[in-house]
Length: 300
Image 1 (tube, one colour):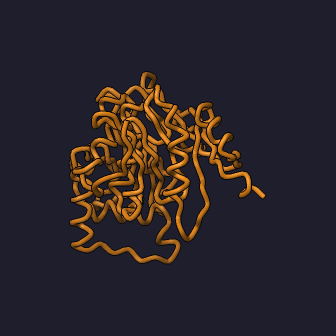
Image 2: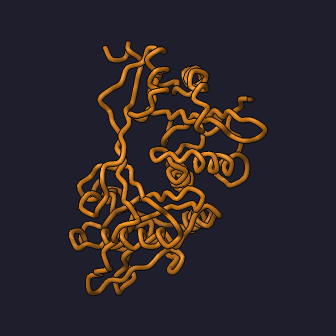
């Protein structure tokens, strides 16, 4: 067993592929390989300056455990393959010494509520659970997926069929409220090149980046899905609708189309990191929860 830190950048060279494979093998439905891919694909997430702080434990070149982060060094995720839970104490020690921001030295660690091995270690290290939770909902793909009901004047497409990154990014920009916050959308040739670099990679299936588009070619709603055949688990991320097209069922239809496609590919369930009523109305059900822990003295 050896320890080292992440090598490489956001490209598929270096440790990117090995970490992807580790997350697939883990079968985890919280911090999935797809969650990692989503953040690596979208440049504002999983801050590149901290990638080299990801801790890796491996044997003969195979990753058996990793301490990851979400977006930035805010909440940390110690993860292991089954049978290697004994690595948790070392993972905690590494995270405490190396994965806390200098300007914001608060140690926060996520533990799935059924992961008693990690919970025991965190208690031994003087940490306590907080009220901050993460929820995962799941859709059983062996059941029924409603037939398409696309509103008149719209059709469903994907980035594989209609590779308009400008419209795609504008839909995301408006759908997540950036315009409402006073920000101004722009899409340059540099942005176009970044999109190609990010999305046209072997781990990204553009046929699963589903959008509802009107007759003028405007992207009105989007649902991104991620799937690796080795996992049998698909991830829904992200889902949005531009303001003037909400409550028309467009995001619902995009999600259902994505679910139909991943089921055809062999997926057994699809998960989403959410407990929003929107997903429950589609047929997702509560799947699991996790809690953020922090040192006891920080609870005071």
